[in-house]
Image (cartoon, rainbow, N blue to C red; front, side, top):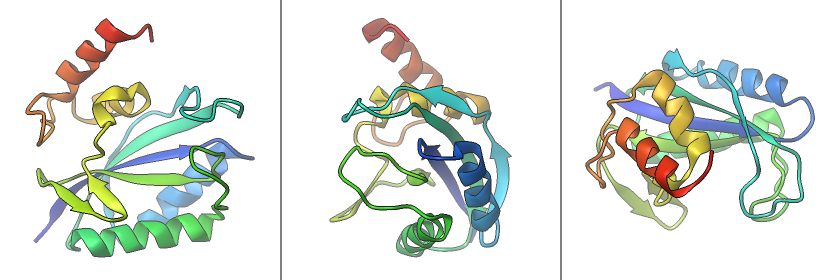
Length: 156
C-alpha cells in the first residue's frame, strides 16, 4: 500500500542548499518523491542566536510503515552529516515527518503531525506550494486556513 508522506527539510549550517539536495537524493532512494516545494528562508526558532534556515517540503509516497519511515529519515540525516548539538540548535539537516496519510501517531520520539506544526510559517508556506487544500488530521483545517490564522497572530 502506498502511503502519502509529507516531509519537512531544514538546514542552517554550512552549505545549506547542498545539504538539502543531498537529503533529497538519499530520500529518493526509497521514497517516490512526487512534489517539492520551493526553498524558503526563515529565522531560527527556540535558540535564535544562529544562522537562518533554508526550509522546504516534499510530498512522497512509499509502502513503508511509520516506524520504518522514521528510522529511514534518521539514517538519511546521519548520512548527510547531521551533528547532534543541543535542542533548537544548528543543524546540517533536519527532516521531520509532517504528515503520514491522514493518521495521528504519538511515540516517545515521534509525534505526527507535529503538535505545533500549525504555528510554524516555515512549514506552512512550503506546504502551500504542494497542497494548500491538505487537511490537518487533528485540527480539521486546510493548510491554507492554518496559514491564514497564523497571519492573524504574527507578522510574517
